[in-house]
Image (cartoon, rainbow, N blue to C red):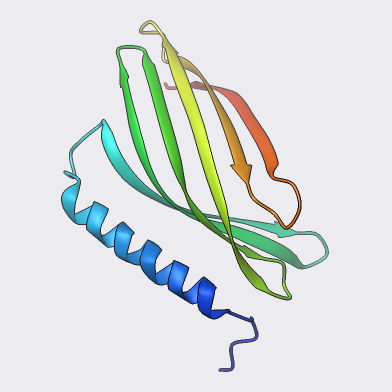
Length: 132
């Protein structure tokens, strides 16, 4: 099947380097660790009367915390598919959480950013979670 997306040499090289880094970190990071380095690959798609586009984050990060507090920071490439083209951008996220005693209730927040052709774009996420 013919690939209908345009991939530049720069995008392919960045994807290769990112893939190599993901494999290296995966091999070096202990599987049972709750704090330390991690790899996160995430796709977010948009559909309104059909496919509008997607962003796939390929990030290396670090998470940690103590007691009720947790944090993480991650960054890397974002492959932006706007249905006409696939572009590589830089993106990152920082976030944290707070668990309220032994109640099963926690609060969390995140700040994210991505480069664009003009100005960077930033986003936030806040929420609450209850574990039964």
